[in-house]
Length: 79
Image 1 (cartoon, rainbow, N blue to C red):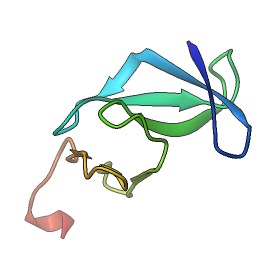
Image 2: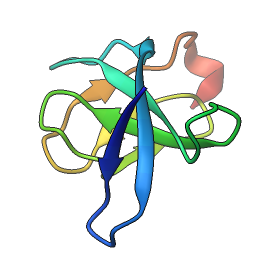
Image 3: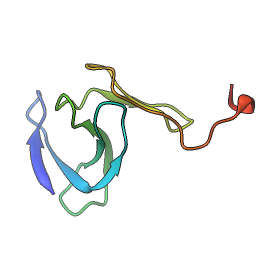
Image 4: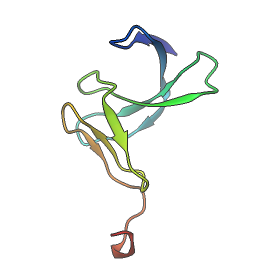
């Protein structure tokens, strides 16, 4: 895992071993600790941003560059 610092000085840990495909580049899983126990969120590898959001259907979006990961399963019942 690679350590990265947030704007507030917090250290988080990014792993390339766990990734979700995005429209512009993969989203990498981020943990609060280097042992990988406390999942924090996602890192956009396209623009190197932690400013990402995930909804209840599993869609991930980078709020900085618009990189998107669509939900794994989708049908009209999800809307």
